Structure formats: structure tokens, C-alpha cells
Length: 398
Image (cartoon, rainbow, N blue to C red; front, side, top):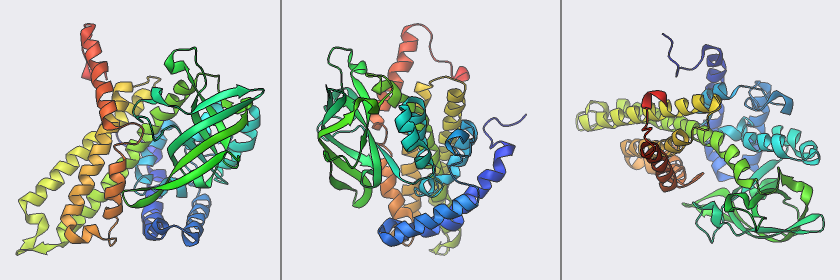
């Protein structure tokens, strides 16, 4: 019987090519890319050129947007190896996928024509703004940035932060409070704001655990944009954002698995090559336990993520599964990278390996798209609600 979680045969060759591109080209470029500046920009442009030439560009984007048209489940498997480096999605042109799908479904014809094809070609960056500095980011109903109607324009005021890539983006899709007479989850809308608007002001690039990571704080001071910049109907911001976040969390989790597997590779290679106190590290039981724990956690998170992806592909929102895998995937990444760093000892703290950077980036994962605690509570409440109704929870059916 075939393994339902194995990489499908028709995807294996493409997946192998993407993995080779990552290992041979992207991973060796990381130190330069981490440093930023003109040299990093030129190197990334060259990587993107090579990805296009190899037929690996934007493979998860729909064909009608200029992408490769790879189906969702197939792309999930490719995303796993693309995720070995955080620069993979930029080098391969897939970092715009969620924004492209959102524009394709909900943008006015004007914005579809102006933005859709160019962002698939990576001619410019999009960005997305939800989180705010002065309210709990885990509760989006508290968001304060507002938009009021003035003639045929929105006037937007407020402040957002952790708007990734804002300093290089041509526009930001902003979650704003637009309704005062509707239930709270129908009170917000998504509005496209060009970043060259005079009221759009980047306050700072936020240093995150000592790294400048393109996470910006942005002030919106009387920003005026046409009402036609609204994505979808007024008050539909939460619903549209959730459509964006569900598949996005699966993509995040698969990329985290790629990074965890890379850290696992580094750890095992080090264990087999490093001698201490008369034998290899690989021969020491405490080190063997690190391998065992990492293998079981990676495999568990991987199967959980693929199961959620299959359920979502079948049309289910899979909210329990996605909430659980988001937490499990982030925790797995952090623990595996931590173990690999421990195996490398002092060398792991330096830039001689990618582990120092990976260690810090792994800690971000427990905040991306909602803090762990929010997803833990949400999953538990949904499961307990089933028991309250007498349905229980059938793991065989999930």
C-alpha cells in the first residue's frame, strides 16, 4: 500500500531540483545576504535570474498569474525543501504567493491590472500590515488603526508594526477598523495603501533579537486612498485575512520543517566527525538521545502538517489541525536547532555555521501568525466543545 504522506512520484524530480538549488546556490550565499546592502541585492537578483532560467520561478503561483501552477499539495512538498533557508522563497519567487492569491480573488480590476503580474515577476514587493504596537497582537479585535470615508476616499490613521518588507514594498495591504455598527468580526476591512503616499511613514526597521529583519514600524497619518482600494466588501477583513493565514501557516510549517531537517543534517554530520574524550560524539549515548528526540519530533510535525494540508485541500478549514501544527512546528524547529547548536559547542555560536542565525529566527516562529498560547487555547476549546456536545474527538477521522 502506498504511503499517503510520501512525496508523490510526479513531484520528486522537481523537489530534488529545488533542493539542489537551495543547497548549491542559496545556502552558500546566506552570509552575504544576511549582511544586506548593494552586494546582497545584486546576489539575490542573480539567484532569481538563475531560478527563472532553471524553470523554478514562482512554481506555486497559478498559471494565469504567470506562475508554475503547481497544485497546493504538490507545492507543500516542494515548500519543505525550499524552506531550508529563509531566503529560498525570495530566490525562487514564491514569497508573493499569498498576496497574489488575495489580490486575484478580491482586488478591483484596476489593482489586479496594476499589481498582479508584476508581483509574480517580483518586480516589486507587497507587504501586509495587521499587528499594532499598542494592543495585544494575539487579539485582532483590539486593532485601533481606523479608516473613515471622506467622499470617495478612505482616510486612514494609526500605527502598525512588524510589517515585513515595508521599506521595499510598493504597497501595503492594511487591516483597518471601518465599521462602528456591526459585530466586531465584521468591523474591519483590508485596504491597499501605496507606500509612496505622503501619509505613509516608515518609523523604523525593528531590530529583532539583534538582527535587522525587514520588520518595519509604520505610521499612517491621514493617508488618503480611493474606496476602490478595498479588498472585497467592507467588513470582510477578518474573513479574507483568515483565507490568507490558513494555507500560509501550512507553508510556514513546511518551511520550518526544511530548516529543522537542515539543522538535523548539520547535527548528525558533526556527531560523526567530531572526536572528544577518546571517541566520536556519535558514540556517546547522551548525543544519541539528541538524534532520537529530533528525529521523532521532525517526523511527528511533518505528518501532522501533511495531514492538515490534505484536509484543507479537500475543502475543510482544518482549524484544529492548523492551530496544532503551527505550535508543534514552531516548537520542533526551536528544539532541533537548539540541539544542533549544543552539539557544535562554541562553534555553533559563531557565523561559521548557519545555526546562530537559525536559532534566533526559530524563536520568531512562536509569534508568527499568532502566539503559541492563542493557538493552544483555540485548539483546546474546539476539542472540548466537541466533547461538550457529545461528539468527542475521533483521531481516526481527523
